[in-house]
Image (spheres, rainbow, N blue to C red):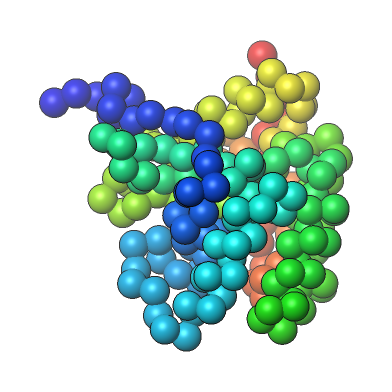
Length: 195
């Protein structure tokens, strides 16, 4: 059997990846398991989120996303971006969400800030978990951040998911602060990027 690193390919997303990216984002905010059948009541939100993922100036844009593939099939993705762009991307993204769904996200805490490279949403299909794909995606974005002068990489993890928090801590992330976003409390974790 080949090691997973020889069969996993990472690539920049394209607009054709929007349906998969939308599932990753919904998984990131616990609205949908990435493997689950889409409930009818979430179809409109999902379709609108796909449109947002196809745009080039939103938080969840395909331009901010790396895709992990095995044998040409999408198995995971990570949405990440420059914290200096967060406020402008958030204003557009949350405005679009409110226009179509009526959800007011303006009370969400600011998740990131200038000087940080922010890992926003990540998910891996259940059949491919435990193979190091998440670590590959994070390492890829850590390398990108280092090459582009970012000294700190940050992310949020749901306080109700201690196992996930332990996973990120095992990768060197440490607690920064608590934030209230999407109706739940999250721990913001950070890692200094060193050569």
